[in-house]
Length: 122
Length: 146
Image (cartoon, rainbow over all chains, first blue to last red; front, side, top):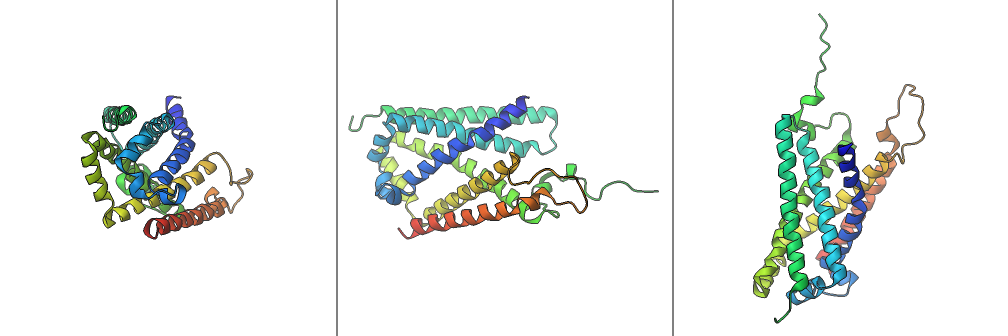
């Protein structure tokens, strides 16, 4: 049952990733097409900070971070778990991926929070 | 004495099982591509989080990093990343539809010669791959010829 829940979540986050990653690509990599903004301008420090201070962007980044990391790390775990590990090693892999995921998610949230609170010229 | 042992024990292929296509041909290579693109994307995502943390070192450090990413080799890498994301997403949509039972036809009596579910949904496979190709071409043209 636990595995079914984990797999279902892996599938359920896909629409979130499709929409938010699509928007992220449009904004950061295809800004000239979708926003009439040069890629250089879209990636400037001041533009990036201004974007990060928007509450909508803040929520979107956290959601994308959580959904993307969960989907990707669960997929990686699935690939690794296909190999014939001993049960103890398999648990160790699960634990390692979980700790890694939490650490990288925490860093992402911290950077997003830092940007949200940053004062330009301050 | 009869040897009933299968020629290839699928449980013991190990790493070879990730790339050994057997008779599944096209879909098996999509499966391999899905894994490789997925691993590439999660590796990139982790690097991307670390790289964007660089903003905390200040405007100068950020500008220097962005100048590196504006160079031609990074443009190519950026495109490969985009292509991997498009492929993974389109193939993932196919997998999700098939896993939910779409495009497989109605259940039938298993009468020989059997028609595999892989063959039943192959038109969908071709369709999503054509769409993926179009999106990749579109993304490439706008990235390299803005």
